Image (cartoon, rainbow, N blue to C red; front, side, top):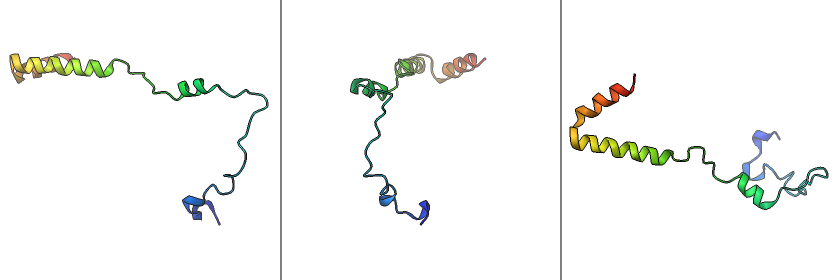
Length: 79
């Protein structure tokens, strides 16, 4: 039987009962360090706030100058 013919619920039957490998050379990572490693990645810190501020500014432009002012501003910022 090839791997493609094995039903998903039995795919790992051959290794499921094996003991977890423990390295003799490398100590286990502390639980707090593991948690930090898999914590949410915040590369775009402040991005959400910047988007909200941009939307707020555009909303103010719509209310004060009308839609034509937004089109004029967006065409100037694309250069």
